[in-house]
Image (cartoon, rainbow, N blue to C red; front, side, top):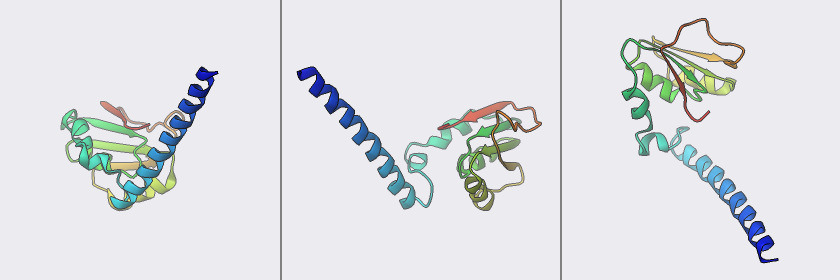
Length: 125
């Protein structure tokens, strides 16, 4: 009997945690003008940029709004960002365009660009 109560409480706590996480992420993203605060608070982009060479051609799968793609593009030779969400790609093109970046709407399992890539990023995919 006690074990069943604990199981119910654990399920409830996990659901509450998931709900709280989603809600706090939504609020935080609005406060940061569309960018999740982890990007700023945790030097999130630095990890990826530090592991890119200046002659690399990079594929960023699930690029979202393009913020990471743009920062990687400051160092890489070329970056292609892909995302399933058309709105994300529109925002990426508007906010984070650069001569060496390209944004594509599509599923890379079916619509892989005809390029050869040195590095593939799957951040939060």
